[in-house]
Image (cartoon, rainbow, N blue to C red; front, side, top):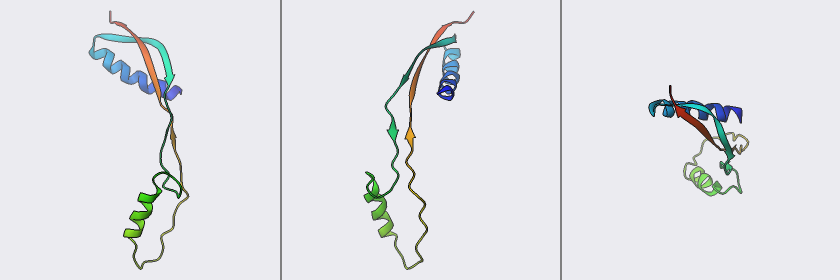
Length: 87
């Protein structure tokens, strides 16, 4: 989570500077809904599209090696900062 705050702070500092403000601290950190990315594995919500595409591209070549399915979960945060007028 510290890298999320660091990334958010650098963006906030750019915006604040353009507005003639400076970021002085964090006032709120909120975890948003997690987003699960599709793995492409059988049973996943998007497997039919992947399977259909594979059938359409099928040829007489040797079968291609398939890597294990990987599911990524993206955790998102909203960070709110306190800003004050630059002196």
